[in-house]
Length: 116
Image (cartoon, rainbow, N blue to C red):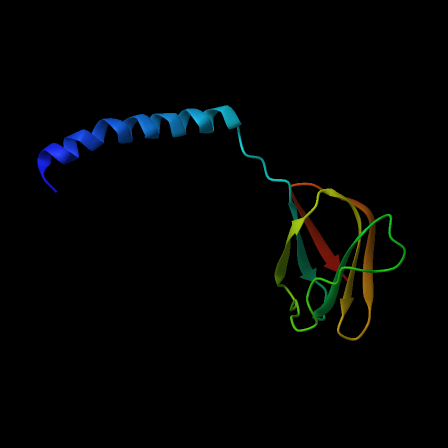
């Protein structure tokens, strides 16, 4: 491509870039509409199931480890893409012992340390 053709493209490209930046400025800041929960296993056993259920539900739904992952002793696991709200939490060891927390507000980032 010769130099004269390139010079002819510079001004239209600069105008296009300026318009794109102006359009982005009109949109405003992008906000995240999801939260996360980090579970810290401070028990003496691995955790095999973690439930994050809206507090309006009866029973436990929303198992988050998928049946294949565990959270070992001293390990952390973060559940992402949670819609901000109020939840009931349940963590089960592989032997069936459970810890529960009710009416936990989850906004932005929350940490739950599970103990024996």
